[in-house]
Image (cartoon, rainbow, N blue to C red; front, side, top):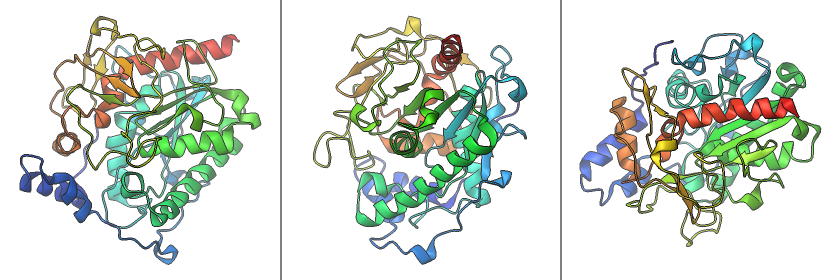
Length: 371
């Protein structure tokens, strides 16, 4: 299998690590993160980084025409050769940039290296058994657009969404050629992917080719999906899988996205939840014995960790009360997981449920083609 990619820590990660050191008990770390990464309250279009052009393959983080970290696979769970794939996956990566401006430079080598490790390697690779994987670079937005919404943040978010929409249009026109496709995303990518679903895909001819949308780790209500329903069975197609994994000791802090019920409400209340062990929304607890395996590709020796976690949808949360040992990973990844707070599994939601997601994408593509 391809070797996991590593990149040097960016300045923002170092600042977050410093914040953690200054606040060893967690009392002020979240406030310090805001201070060191604050973009200010003014959005200036003149200072925006250049918009990526999607006719240029260099502006695609993942593309079937060249090797990239989304190709990684364990020997026991091989990837399909892109030229033999019967479907495509359009993937939107999470926040992989920690900076002080409103929008990230999509052409930055540092940002791209972080996207390789923090998006393609550990998340997008889950779809390479069913699909040829496409993932655009885009001018991602500063996280404060989600944790402390403001007019400036909304403008910056529009910039990121416009990149995503243009990339999807180019994907449909040039690469997809009328094939079935999966929409996949995490965190910031999920917010943008949900908007793409309701504003661009729902009601269009492209909706008929949507196998499923895996919109994970975002503050999504089922009413904000453009009428596309949640998946309620493992063979459903044309539907949405969404969840946010937390443990019983989780306490929301200022780094949490504002939830669908708005500021002041519990941030996870009202979020959509499809259980990735049962593929249902019924609230039943599924034990670890039904978990096919977690995979952490950002470890030195990636392997399947079977029966890794239980899962239950409860009040907008995928509650994980019982899980295996989370392996030591790249140091920056471990720091960020610690900064998110106890029992907040947001940074590792794909990895914790890696094989269930991988298997299910294959199953839904087969079900779609069978219909």
